[in-house]
Image 1 (tube, rainbow, N blue to C red):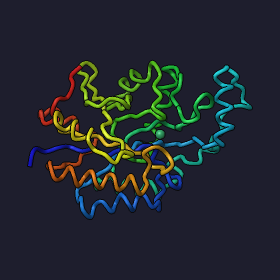
Image 2: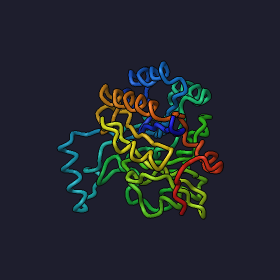
Image 3: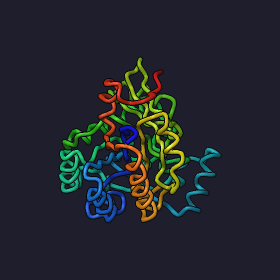
Length: 283
Ligand SMILES: [Zn+2]
């Protein structure tokens, strides 16, 4: 056996809507089935506590986007959203109970994926598009409060909806005790910013790919791997039969070469302080 590697598997968009993380979704069963072969597998979910993004007809949505780019931003042209806080997690006590059970068993880790995942203009799911610092803070405080009020344990780790980062988002998060940020999808090396005391989480492998050359190349220099998925099957790297098969094949190949240890993101700080992780970039 070559060396021990630390693997984090994360998903975006968890919330209590059917196909996006509702309790009886089939995907959940599929993910739990991995426990049969990988008894210590664990997952990280970037969770949206008050999901409002509503998928519109793609052509109408495209026309609206074009108009918004011409600064035609009138209420009539705004993107549609879920009304009445339909997927506010507080409205789903059974779901909350279920999530708490999974986190208590260290099977799930909850991280934060925005507040509503919605904005009115330009891109319907890019919640943090062009927000001011004040607006950032309001959304972040509200999201944190929803988790706290419902007693859901979460990691101070943030990934922005639709990868959209505004100029003051990072400082807004740092000022609010966030320790782990996943703001840059193209980043492949874990980095630690000494001054701010934060870790920048990379994304090394998208489950869409059935070839693993990049993964093994990355593991020559590093002993960590961050695997990225979406929950909804229709999105890029969503949970589908092929992507589940990709994960299974990847884990089998990894285990042939390495000792695989699954980790949650909150475990990174300790591993880093113990000098366990290889070639973490220091900034
Ligand atoms: Zn998302």
